Image (cartoon, rainbow, N blue to C red; front, side):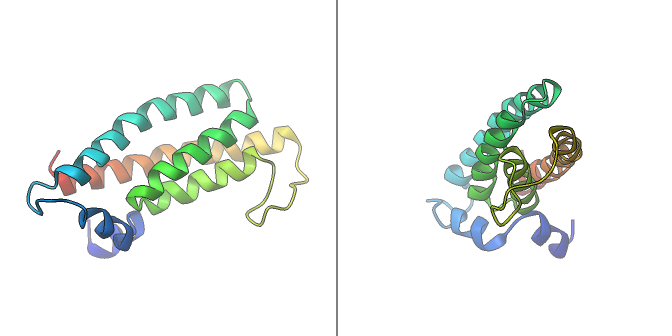
Length: 136
């Protein structure tokens, strides 16, 4: 992955701030542990997101999007964070500015279905980047 592609996946200013917290710049135990925990926790969250989508639970999708947005932002995972923010907003039935959406539940679920598929793709990309960076 080129440096430019990596910049799209990861906000290096955020990620580098995390790396600055490592005691050993070679071992990177602190930041690597956070990355490993992110990957493990995300597996469960993505299952929960799939289940919420299957049961048409818009509110739960909003909460789970919010949760995953926070986890991904701590690592600077831009695409994941952005997609989760969109899921969060749709789950709350608001646009990016907080204005109420004038969409039916069926329309919201159609958008959420597309975003959940996108989330799986961008999360895979982010996890691959982390695994490559940490040689996991």
